[in-house]
Amino acid sequence: MSGKAVRAAAALALVLSVGTVPGTAAAAAYCQGITEASNPDWMAGLPDDASLAQLSIPGTHQTLSLHGGELTRTQEDHGDSARTLAVQLRSGIRAIDIRVRRYDDRFTLHHGPFYQNANFSDVLREAGDFLAAHPGEAVLLRLKAECTGEVGSCADEGSQLDEAQILDWYRDNDPNGEYLLDPAGGAVPTLGEARRKIVLVALQGARGGLHEGRGVGQLTNDTWGERVQDEYTVPTLFDIDDKWAKARDHLGTTVSADPGELFLNFTSGSSPAAPPSAVACGAAGFRGVNDHALEHLSTHDLPRTGVVMMDFPGADLLNTIIATNP
Image (cartoon, rainbow, N blue to C red; front, side, top):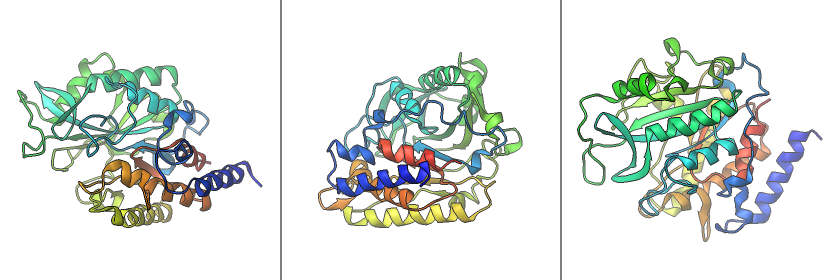
């Protein structure tokens, strides 16, 4: 039996022994316990000519959403000012989802009305420090404006520049702006081109519209629904299985497509009746999406997963995604 098969069988055995009760130490296999994973250099051994699109890349949804209560928290809290990001990167996370408010022509991090005690300069610092220490790695960035000005959201303040102009300011003026890479011509970079860089995958406005001409050209306003699965509304706990079905089907779409095509798959979801932690980790009598995902990946020999954006990923789930890479 190959090493990959042994790891997969062990991961599956652990999943089946855990059951669906969140909050236990064993549940770290698929949910939380991210510090149990240590993969600071997993990209370094992959070939330079590999396209980022053909890789299996674990990521976090709302990467630094730690404050505001059960309905807004999506990740384990390992410190403000993006210190949580440093922990995620050491664990093996290589795709991040950053939501920003335009404040005095700079970016602060928000989830709805809640400031997340971090700014975009903190993200660049922590990611830059990591890449300087691990130059064989690359970080994919989905950057999205958060504030619509509506009730339940936030409002931008004191800014004349749009999201693209502010991002360019950081690239040209922030001490760590050198790490930002907006792919030339929109092509999906090879890993060799992306090493030691924060690669802009998509830049979006507050209502989801893409800034065309920025990021990866395969992702446009017309193709977003085909390339990206982000059905984030999970009305009740009884709908968690439906959310998993959407994520599973998108994995199938990713596998059947040309390996040069980039796909993003958000396993996250929430609603007032089904907070992010319950959707990801499960609740009494309900199996979480992360549990489903670990079992599926452990029992199917997938050639790639694409970019998988998760809430509260556990160590074995991270390790299993990474192990999918040849």
